[in-house]
Image (cartoon, rainbow, N blue to C red):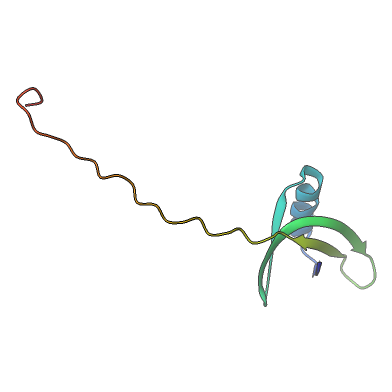
Length: 82
């Protein structure tokens, strides 16, 4: 689990909406970006500004899909197409 704290009201709302809809959310911080499901959002009223503590359960990294080459498109020039 990953714990993230923010004082940004819009960011806290975005995480709350992601939790409500069951979607993944991405938290960006100095260490990098963490993407996962929001488990909880707790408002911390201590201090001058309100803060929210967000708990995220990271998603499993997806396996890289093998790169496939698309088939080449070949157009034959015939008298019918001219």
